Length: 466
Figure 1 (cartoon, rainbow, N blue to C red):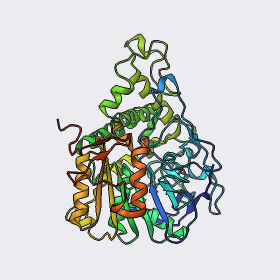
Figure 2: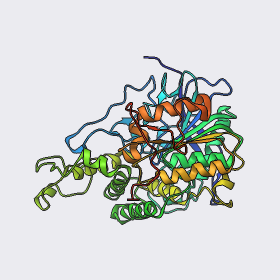
Figure 3: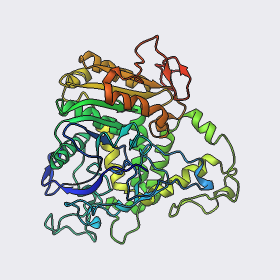
């Protein structure tokens, strides 16, 4: 197996003032790098909502595996790369790495190699050609500063709690804070201008913020399965998810650290809502149909507070329910509930046009090229939203291609269809909008490849248009 240089660590970046105006004395950012930096080949990958810095397989980590249980349905990853495997936090290899327990209690449970089919030697984002950087965003729980990380002893020492975590005293975060923290990390690593910034889902919003906030710092922006802002339907679903967490008695106003029980039930329910958002109607029908999981099937993840035998009261217990229960339990084992509150709120609050006349005005200063990629049955971030985003780039005189993939995987497609995502990303990194595999859906005569060797006419309607 071909390997490339890999480094990981937790960078201490000093005092940091968040967009809300509040500060912390020390911002710590967990990161991983792949490949060698030659001065102009850096690619920043922005992870999705609950993803981690571990974007690709490393020599120190064995092949990623997917736990396959009867309760799990099939083994597709979800919107953030959750596939049932937990990775070790290799924070000790960098000079500025701190003790793992000072960063996050969940660091060892991060989603491992969540985009390994796209990033790595010989892959679309080729680590023998590019220097790839991925950082865990502030507010998350995989080593970067957030509500689950250790609070310095000299910050409000009279606070009457029985744990040493920030909890809800951590400042609210915005996507702009992620961008600024990434810029500071890159400066720390000696990286100036980037070849590209790449990201999917809310990671794509992070990419857009780079184009707005640091318009001269990247040659290319690659925005995958994202939009300039969330629509009201997604805002509503996120609000319900947060209420599920806050309604769990174990949440305790956010103070559940130390020896207290954690709000696994609320976090699991929140995640179930997310899973429904990430799949399409057709993919759910294909994966589950209306099939019963059987009276004796596994019905819950460890620690998920549901009846031991829900089929006794509600039969049949269907495969789709079994899938949701399994993933709720496994997610609650690896993620922090407060971080979920913080990160979903950051996604909800993002608006590309914030502070500008409109989206085009926000992107007007960007000096590079852009690739916007969407998926025909993604109803979390629709094709229409991507088309509008591409139009904003065009109005700003930014060379752009809106590459539409015909897929029934829904929002998850950007993770589970490397054969569709990889070629346009690879060719765009090499040649911009002139890349061989880059197809602009705005051109009515151009087919849209689905990665299977067939072509389909562009589709510009959302899942709910008909």
